[in-house]
Image (cartoon, rainbow, N blue to C red; front, side):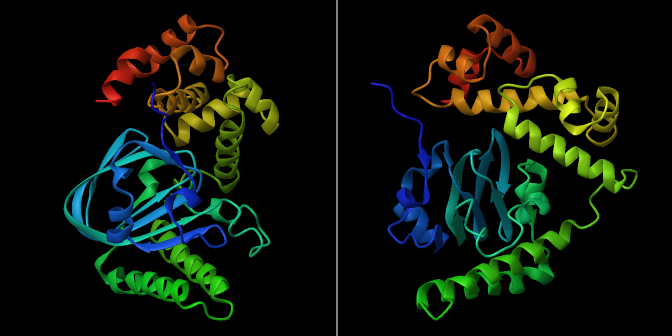
Length: 290
């Protein structure tokens, strides 16, 4: 019998679910959920601050070295796994996609923070020494509010989380390339958002350019200027990433994955995947599941 790929929601991860959020110190969280070292994904936002410990953490098949006072931000759908060394502790917060919607007038408020973009280089943040104590104090305050059930406690948790996001977000202020105008930067973010919504059905730059009301040449020049790769490669990279995520799902066959990604047949999917990754789907699956 094939074993289903683990996909966790907040309910399955804790009996302490309240209003689509889970807050915990990391050591007891890890003790309860021992299988989280295996590749799995979440339906919610997931952030972890380490205060002690080491090892590695793989997000979407890219490995990072775990260090104290390092924050990991993960968005729904990303595949990740842990491999820890020695005692590990810190804090973990899981919250659902609509968690802030009733609290903020802007439903896309979190999208302004680069660490929630899904870009891996932005998702792992080393906290500078002078912010170790202030950041830890925010987490401790969040823990306190979650445990004491005071009046408007959940709103206080949300306010503290926003303080946390803004404090860490300021560390990345000014990372927008200096030669990219605000308009083009916004345009690129809109392109990436459209890819996220349509990568299984729209696979050509000209289709996205039409949705953005610009020419394919403009879109291509923008991607080359900011990302160093053409627009078509940005689209293909997203499709390949989703293929990788599906390939570590024990319950999906190659044919089913090709179908879900709207490839005409297995042969076309295999050619596409090997060109993008250097491996056939079968080779990647075996390597990833070792």
